[in-house]
View 1 (cartoon, rainbow, N blue to C red):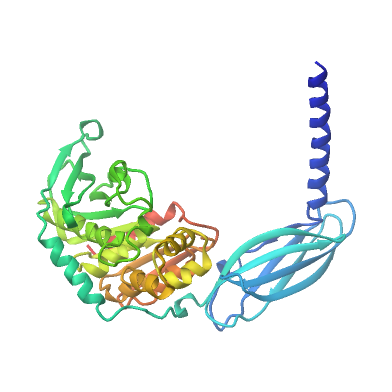
View 2: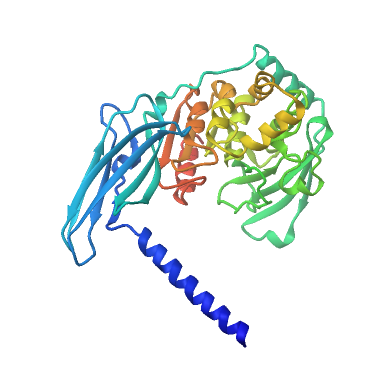
Length: 422
């Protein structure tokens, strides 16, 4: 009982302490950072941050805001400060207007300076002229030869397609199958294949999956054949994964690097869909997010059978810049580099063969891309490093409040885009 009493006392003291700390760290005013231009700015408009400061206390309050702006690599760029005095129950507008040195994405940190303390108000990213971002290609002279050789090797592997009906997930609307096939090196890959129950010829959507995604089945979009692919070692194949952490596997040899085989799995998926009698081969589309976004771009670069693609938050692009911006996947790759004793030149030479930035110029089909402005996994700078090298018809949507995702509305936006090309 005595121990219980003292535990209650300690808990009460900690509660008071935490409450006091929370009270000390609370902003004096309530701030709202307005979505001016959705936080993406285009010349000749000047970038600006608009802030509404509301005083919900009973007294007139004076506060100072500080806005710190850095590059997406965290290099400091600007610091601005403004003071504001707001009467009880009133609000005031504050504006920070500035110029940016070059196209790109920038980090903003808004803090309140009051009573000798600094309280964080909001962290967010903004963009400036994203279509003008230049990420110089570092493709090796034999890039085309390298991938032509991989395609030729794949063509020598008999796919041996095997479809197994899944009765519990099939009904009067659609039939669902588990599909297995062989890809480069004789590796078995698989996926879920959904076909409208009514016989006919249909457009097809191939969905490529994110890094480490768990297996999922297509929803059965009316009027479409759908195929969700699991590449080697991932999703349906993860129980028999022999690659470990995929992005680091074979880092010292382009012929054995994981994504050489994985990119060929993407082509084999197109082979499968194009072989089906219910598929309109002139209307095969591909989509995916993160790694799946990179996969849809790689597939379109390496195979001209895709009619249009819809990548979101694409991964695997502009490795040298990418690794300066993010902790993951940079850290495991850099750890593997040290383990293998590779120089930067050697490592980036290998990665250049699989860099979406270097492949994107080969894309010939229409492209629609979705981007999360607050993405810290595949930052928008890297999304545009590949996108800006595409010369075919293209468009993009930047979602200002999204991170490593896109809103539910993206699905409809993408499907409307695909419908234009049927």
